[in-house]
Length: 210
Image 1 (cartoon, rainbow, N blue to C red):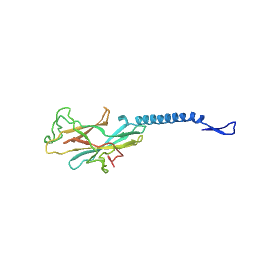
Image 2 (cartoon, rainbow, N blue to C red):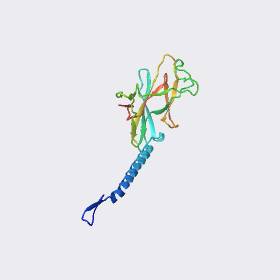
Image 3 (cartoon, rainbow, N blue to C red):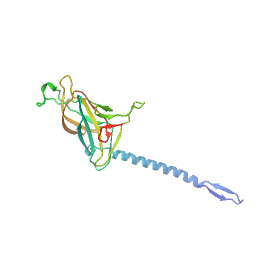
Image 4 (cartoon, rainbow, N blue to C red):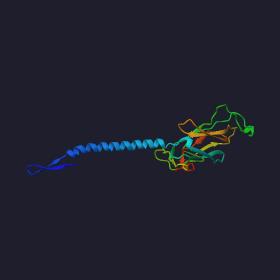
């Protein structure tokens, strides 16, 4: 604030001493506040990223019309909220031996260590993005926050299950989060006659977002 000081001649003059002192102080306080908010937001973002140890996967078969498909429900069983975004990490090992329970003419043996090709896609036969196409051609992937204990997200996996020739067999499915080496593994039998299309994490259990 400025001050009015009376002179000996009866006039008043304005003193800017307080303004000169307070203005820089206000700037410093505002900068400090913004930096504090930024640090808290950054820390919160780091803390809220889901880890594989707090997630549980449930596979729901959703195939048909010559396609194999799963809608995969991902539930947070941890005590803290966390977020998922982008595409999951999916590996589909292919069996290098014949399954004696399956007709030989239907299965193709592949070299040891083979995996089905996995492709990230916005939408698929079983779900994914079903909204309008933006003029830019780019679709923002959803950010899904999972509440503690009950929060859920989902994604879909689709492949061709029949073909004109014998197809490789998969008996194991491995799922995880991009950027991590750990994977959750389950036994699931499938004929994998094509690559596997995987959609991003979406809110809720439908595997679809708009």
